[in-house]
Length: 360
Image 1 (cartoon, rainbow, N blue to C red):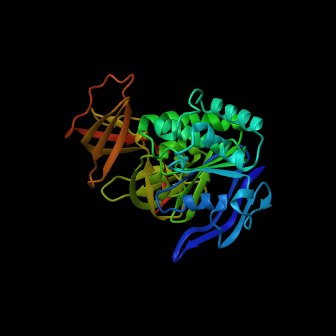
Image 2 (cartoon, rainbow, N blue to C red):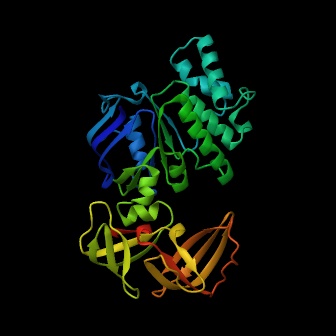
Image 3 (cartoon, rainbow, N blue to C red):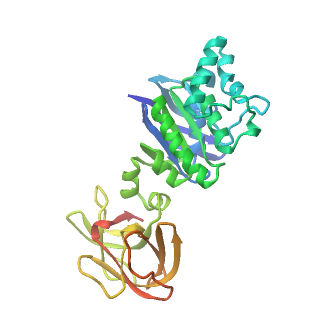
């Protein structure tokens, strides 16, 4: 069953179209992320679902009920904001209990519900502390507990980890996924962090300038982006532009300036002859130092431009014949070859099925 359905939703702010004819269905119990740059309309979608904004046109349905005219407090949703919005003068217990008290729950019910949430978010022993006495991660957990204690059908998360440092953000990503699975609620998370969306989501949608460009699983969107805009926003990608001159058996041949003919996968549904972009992910590139090797349909000479040590990987940047910069990602574990050095001549090779042709 779909818990949240948006149909042809439009929302404008003055002359700016924040959400442009968006249609989207989110399943019950799903962790769904909306990914996009600042100003893409992703937070506006959250506010529309929450009832904080009203659509200019289109319908919003929650649990098979159209809620366009329903105020926020009667919708089966709750929201966690980027900066938590905790009450600084209240303890952890009082912050979590706030919503229950507004609904005039009994003291016993409040105590039991708060204790359950405190255990769920792993804050035992800290219920009498104030927000200023907590770390950023602990404050985030209080905000999550306060939102979940009312048992919303849908939890809306607006950049929930943006205020945390990188290590804490990674820890909280795992916590968010655990919480969602334990409470079995529908989570809708807005983020501009690619790794966050890929790690957390059952499915995700990519927004750009108010338009929903693509919806799919993280793997589908990473491996089968529908456009170069999506490809550039999801993970690193290398690209070159050219003209499609031939298609056969789901493969395309592209003539690109300063390169030999390139062979790559055609997109689902095919592609018309004409201008197109070829996308190749950095981990799909093979680097050959002693000359081209067999088994790859595409081979480019290149010069090592920059070398970056990145923990368990090496990131290499190469300058191609047309002065374009391409990136390769090489795992360090199990690699005994000597690292490349700037200025070194190499060949970049990749198989046709590891490249994807996208309309320009």
